[in-house]
Length: 464
Ligand code: HEM
Image (cartoon, rainbow, N blue to C red):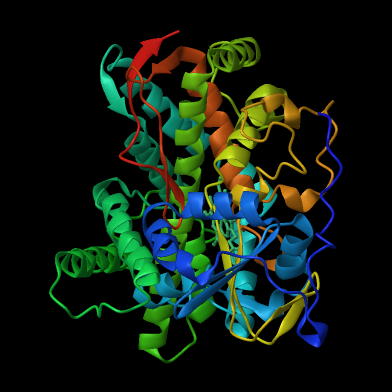
């Protein structure tokens, strides 16, 4: 890949003495339009602002101000260099209050450190390699289901959610989640409420008997029931050896005399892992199928690799290294459609980023979606070109221009599991099938906590 010179920070921006440089950004008169975009099209709001104002944008939206930083060096500063000064922010803060509590994704400081220490061993590389057979069993079941649907329409988003939930249960939790099929829809409702809370600035209290609130209460109840089932062991699949995440958590808190605290910790951690561990990988796979259905030459190359490397056998962990093209397809998919499109943070103390003053308590946005399409780092940024990630290509000039798994200490704990799962499943499915979109259809991203395909991904299944 040829790489353009990194865009230099805009040194022409005016400087306002010790208060730092003056932020570019939309004028006050743009507020109604911004609020509309924040609700209907968050990605367009960020993309349009980056192309109009550059790498730093201040959105002053009435009672809320959002500081949007869009240079890889800014991402490094916030996520990796000064992580203690940036707690989790918009969207996640609401999700924390509504459902995630102090799980690994949303906890801070000492609580986070302790939880990460307890949970991290469940994600060791050798353990992840051992989960390959769980992934390929789920892949086999998916291939069989698709085999009975050739010529019919299937919603691949739904299929990917079902698959990733099953893998998550059988790998990390040693549990069969198939009786808990309401989990996917329940998370959807809960996230919808969290995003609504974010964009309505908390103006609509949860106790009001509005349909959205009632749906949320039901979904939250379902999630907590699912946790009960898991904690009580009623969903255990065989082969539990005490090293799954559920056992590690129980053991870590077994001596705590406070039963309510024990329950709370398990609840928060399990709901978090159920959400973080399935949606992101399902989103990656859904977008992969969408991009392949619109790029037949890439689909053909991936099919050819799968046939050549796998033949008729079931893949294993070692095959990952033998599927370089498939890997680049997944990487390029996560560049164009990063499942976590926004890394939101709230500053603890005032700070300076690239000469711009960030006040204490400011809402800061780093967006993998816009960084991954930054024209200063990615030639033809909106084109799907898996070759960018080939081992023979020049790597991107700044590694923080590609952060699908985040960066710094809060980097994704499940990245190896997610990558392995997406790559093996993609190869197994592409070996036998291709997918056709309805004529003229175009998938539209929906920026919730993760990047969904709006309205699902109905396709016609064809055998290759
Ligand atoms: C392709 C798949 C995945 C992607 C793109 C992804 C992306 C991310 C990103 C960007 C973050 C950082 C969030 C932030 O800094 O605010 C994150 C954190 C996290 N992810 Fe993933 N993830 C994936 C798969 C998984 C899987 C499979 C699991 C678990 C089974 C998982 C569990 C978590 C957890 C628990 C955190 C919070 C870590 C912490 O703060 O210590 N993720 N993920």
